[in-house]
Image (tube, rainbow, N blue to C red; front, side, top):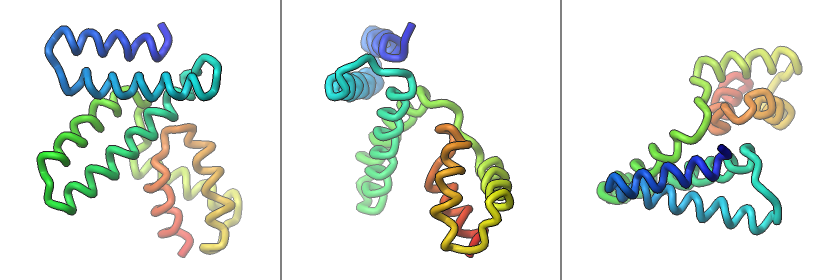
Length: 147
C-alpha cells in the first residue's frame, strides 16, 4: 500500500468514526498531494509525499505561533490539532541532543571556524539528517556553536 492509499484509508475511517477534524485535515493533505502529482505529471514517491507533509506542518506551526501572539486561542488550538494529525505521518524527528551531536561532528569534520562557515556546514547537516532534522533547531545549534 503506497502513502496516498494509506492516507485515503485513514481519511475514510476518520469519516466513518465521526472524527471531523481528522477527516478534514487528511482531505486537505490529499488535495495537496494530488496537486503535487498533477504539477509533476508523475506518481509521487514516498519522499515527495513527505515533502508535502513537511510543508503543511511548517505552515501549521507558523499559523499556530501567529494566532498565539494575536491571542486567538480557538484558532491556535485548531492549528495545533491539525499539526498533531499531520505529524503522525512523518518519520520520528531527531531530538535536540541528537541534532547537537550531529552538528558537532560535522563541524569537526569540516573544520568550520565561525559564522562564515554556516553555509558550508548546514547543507551537510540536512543531508545526513535525511529528513529527520528540524532545520530551525539545527541552525540555532550551529550558530550557537560557531559564534
